[in-house]
Image (cartoon, rainbow, N blue to C red; front, top):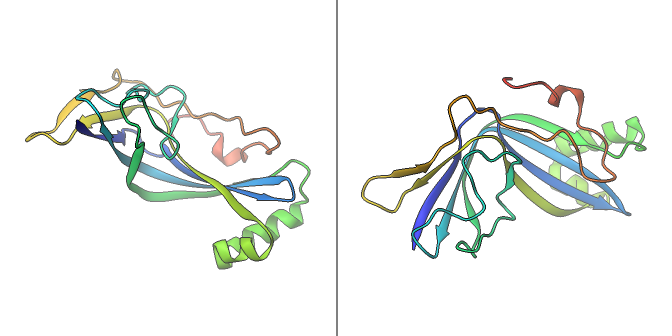
Length: 175
């Protein structure tokens, strides 16, 4: 058995995505963080299966479980929030989008629930290169790091039925 720390290596590479549902419509609140760290306990002495240092497609750590990590990952920290953004269906009226954003800014979950939205799922995505370190030994052991110069990959596609990510989020790396 071993305990591992999984951390982002590049700034602005951690997102928490709150998925809200109402009457078959889906909206997503995206909270961006500069850094993210999770811990994973494995059933053997090997690094968590399915998590790689290169991390080319990103990984949802809240949904993660591997063959040797059946209990998944535990959030350690998401640091230095830098982004609060929304993804709306293409056909949602701009006035309604603004009303939702203003209401959320004022009362967050209470506003959403009073409006009939429910938080269907929350995801925690780590994008780009990761550091994987065994932390249950007397000295931490780095077992996997990406090749130098590897840039993170951030998908610009959204889930089916959800509008495109706002233009401010499509900037090319580095930010």
